[in-house]
Image (cartoon, rainbow, N blue to C red; front, side, top):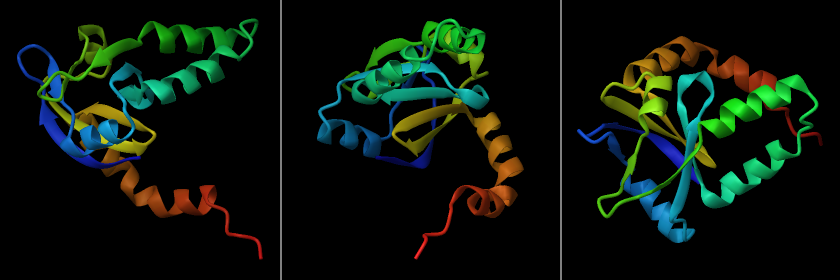
Length: 148
């Protein structure tokens, strides 16, 4: 669904423009409401309402009697905010999420299939540089060949 890498800057009101290609996908899927939350690797995750509800069901079903489940759910859901795109295609990045992701001004917006990730530009550049060489070995480990 979401693919590609884009660079933008936050405006003075901490809004970031969602790339036009992503906004087209929103329209195709009648998505108007989004959820932004703490992501992994100190980025932010942005989900459509449909994907967010599926994530919510999945994580809600983890046993609250397990300490790791409680910790994850607290951190994940306490960071979640409902956001809407304005007429210019911008969403607000709440200050506590901006701080979590160490976003100052410039961001990288990454399409990762069913979600959008928002990274501090410098953090994305560092992640990409440190991990690009392992791309092929990751593929070998994660993608199993088809059995004939």
